[in-house]
Length: 195
Image (tube, rainbow, N blue to C red; front, side, top):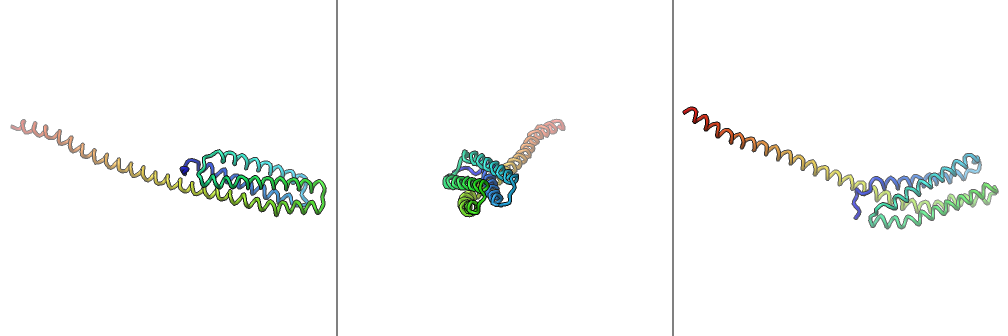
């Protein structure tokens, strides 16, 4: 079993970055469906998509290299092909969007809309669902790590309190023993002097 604290919050942050990028790309696809979109708006939207894809891929590469529990590995293995399918669908959307902008026809627009709203939505939801499972699993690991740290902190405090208490008692006992050891010869000396 993977220890809870070995990768939190790094892994959770990576997954959340991927989720954010995926949602941003999905929103950008919706923007590209606007027929009256200016060239500048289109270019800015495409640039944003490229940035988000790079962000997602970089975070996934780092995440993949981290140690995973068996359960997490199983979800990851299911996620990767769904993610790849969504990326392929996204690329197909971009191809249809380019075809539409090149030759503006209702048929080209309908194909772009079908790709973006129907086909991409299915692969998006499949990848997103598995991504959420990974986030939730890592969130559970984070919660367990917090509990473990709190328990360890309590143990350290209790041990420290016990050590201070024992130290105080020992100091008092040693003080009494030493004072008795000193008082006995002093009392004997007093007794000898008074005679």
